[in-house]
Figure 1: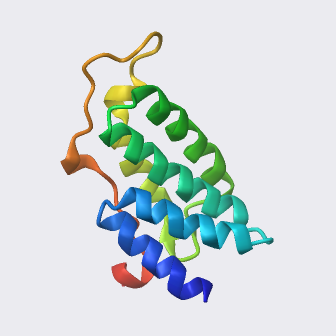
Figure 2 (figure 1 turned 60 degrees about the horizontal axis):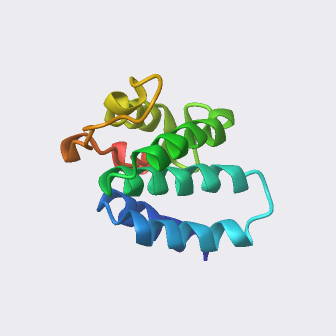
Length: 126
């Protein structure tokens, strides 16, 4: 069941349906008790970060960006068929204008829809 649900979550993420993706990943996360739990949590936070950014909740987006990176850090370059190295690179690029603001509220920063990352599976890249 998890495989089909995870594939659906990846599809929703890549379609920029971040709220729906969050819901699917949260169901998987709730049922997971192994080493994948924090991986799923990181992807949940990524979806929430992108949702917040697109809705101009910049403080929430910045917080979720940082927590996404913390949760995904232990999983190396790839995990669960996802190219995490590429995802982190693209995720950071998408958030660059937001994270470059070192203090205070980042006024006037908007997400560039062309920079939104996708989850690339190793199967898709082969």
